[in-house]
Length: 187
Image (cartoon, rainbow, N blue to C red):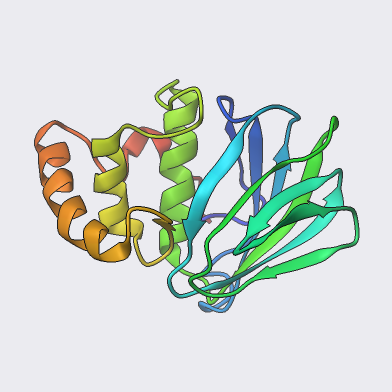
């Protein structure tokens, strides 16, 4: 179980994440995190959550978003909801710091695994300039966290066919879904 209040940073994307509620702390009801994003060009790649609704509350700054067919910006006090399975993306839409509180219902422990690995890879300088993982690393990670997050493309049936093969190759080349050196502080 990740200790509530644990903070992790992704220097390559300019993000800092603070865990506020986890699957364990909420009996599987609520994953909640505060995300602080520096201004810059980073855009969270379009993705879906196959079994969770996600909501975003803007605390500070300008939140740029694409949720389904809607694209826009939200300002402090505004709340946006992304239904289960709807493609979405986000970015800092302003010149200052962006702070949002976001929630996933229900909570899944795979969210913690995803952030642990993604932010750890970033700290080691192993993400691309756009914040992406290498294909084989991503395929290995998605085998463990696919219930939490999936890329919006290729289509799920292609992911279900192709990614297990890519993950097998990735594991043979030493990629893992979790790395001991990235392990989050536990309660």
